[in-house]
Structures are given as structure tokens and as C-alpha cells.
Length: 391
Ligand SMILES: [Zn+2]
Ligand SMILES: [Zn+2]
Image (cartoon, rainbow, N blue to C red; front, side, top):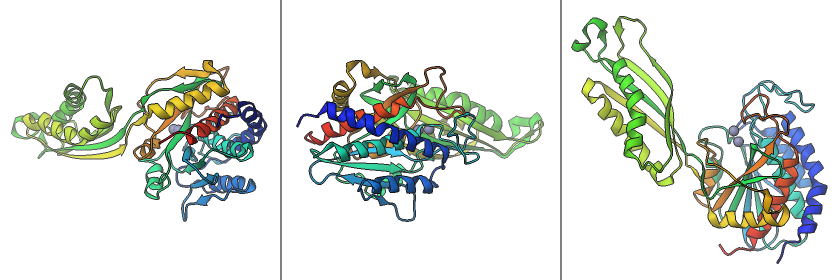
């Protein structure tokens, strides 16, 4: 079944103002992770209005909704949460919730998902079924996707796609990349222990501050040297605390940070490797260490098969010039958790403002709203294509 491109473009154009209005309502009423009650209710009501009966998570935020009656089930994922940021834009629909803001474009992702549901429900008979996953708490660690996967929201889903707004690309462009597109993200806390003592006699005790210094400088380098250099990896310390007086060697120094890597298999090696290296680095000093390594989010690895269908869909509805090459980021996305179970792809949706560049998570973040119609169009066309693939 060939996609009726003209019909899809016409419906998407008609639906876009509604989706933009929804985006503005969501933008004005941001809620942070796991507190997206009003946003969940708005999505629920919008879908019910067009005859779709969503499943709202019992006692939680977030929901799923299925469209279509038979055939291959494919999915589109959107995230509902804003960030604990005080908005500094003068938009007429700026945040009305003090200290909270949609500064990562999730308002746009949710509006696009609703727009796709509106388009597909008007398009006519579909060659398969679509599931819309509206997840909470993408910005929390490790992310709302983990809970939803446990609840089985991707059971039976053959392919899953999602967009993330990209302020570095103009509206009308979609950034595609096969393989890793976002990084894993793990956290660690390392506590260096020693008996403490007088700074005049470090030879009589264990210099925990010196041991910590060795860890800060040696651990990133040694990790790099013992992993395949073709795999981008980043270990960075965010905090270091120890000691109270300039003439007292403290009994403990605590450091925390994150490790990020783009390779799924190497990610599995990291917890043990960090433990071993820390112990080896401090051994000559005589200190001991407690290493608490917390696994977080795996990297998002885009499936080549899913991506080729999306690329074809972009060619159909926007033209070949709309495809842009994009880069892998060391930021993390819990969409990766869904892709542990289902082949899928995360695309970067051009949403850069024509007159200024402002990064995600900035208090003055905004999107070019033209991105919403393009997202609806590409998302709808991609789902229709994916419904017709053999998985
Ligand atoms: Zn974000
Ligand atoms: Zn985001």
C-alpha cells in the first residue's frame, strides 16, 4: 500500500494549528518528572475527543494509546516532563508554574505525538496499528522509560520511533544517524578512606587527599587507555569534598561524577573496570576506597532498518534535502531503555530559531513551531511505512 502523500500533507497542514495550540498550553503549564498530572489529563482528553481510549497509568503519570484494528504494531514515543528551571522568555505562553519550564522541547514532542494521532485517525484505513507512548520523567535518573518498560508498554511493538528537538538544525531538516546517537550515563561515588593525621607527618599515616588527587587525574586516563580508543568515552568528576583544616589530613574524601560511553558492549564492562582501577590507583598510597557505581541509561543505538524506512518517508513527504547528517551526543536519553527490547530510532528534529541559537536546558529556550508540522508529517509517514515492514 503506497502512502497517499498528498492526502497526508493536507491533513498534517490542517492539524498543525491544533497541535501548536496544544504545545502552547503544555508549555504554559510545565510539570517536572513524575508530576505530569495535568499534562497526562490533557493528552487523555485530547485523544478521547477523537475517539481513542488511552490507558492512563494507575496511580502514576504517563499513558499509552493504540490506534488501528489489525496488523503490525509500531510505536511513537513522546516525553511529558519539563525541567526545574525558571523560564526567562517573554513568550505570551511562557510558564505559569514558578520554577518549572519546558526547556528541552518535550512540550513539542507531546504535541507532535498528538498531531500524529489526529492525522492517522483521519487518514483512512491504516496498514497496521500504532501505539503512542507518552512517558513521564525523561529528565530524571534513570528515567520514566524504565517503569513503562516494566509495565510492558513495548510488548508486541515491532518498531519504535521518537524525535528530539534540535536547536542546531533549522525547521524542515531532520537529523539521521545509524548506530549510537546518544550516550550511556552512569553515576559513581568514590570515597577514599584513611586514618587521617598531621600534615607534617604524612609518612606516618595515609594521605587521603593525595590519593583522591591521583584518582581524579589517573582514572579518566587509565579508563581511556584500557578501552578501545575507537569508542568515545567520557568520565568527568562533578564534586569533590574532603577535609576541614589546612594542617589536618582528613579520614575521608568523597568524589562524584558521571561516565558516558557510546558503545553498548563496552558499557557493560564499566562498573567492574572503574572499581578495579580506583583500587589499583590508590594502592601505593595505602588508602582504601568504597566505590558505589550506579548503572543508568544505555546508549541509544539507532537501528539501520528502521532508519532507512524513516529516511524514505522523509524523502516522500519533505524531499531529499530535508535529511541532515547529525552527530552522536554524550548526553543521554532514556528512550534507550525501549530500544533494549524493540528496534527503533531517535531522530533529531530541526527546531532552531531563525534569529538566535539557544541550547536545550536554557532558561531562554524556545522552538521554531514550524517543526511541529514537519514532525507530524514525518512521524505519520514513517509509522505508515513501518507498519508495512516484515519484522
Ligand atoms: Zn533534556
Ligand atoms: Zn529532552
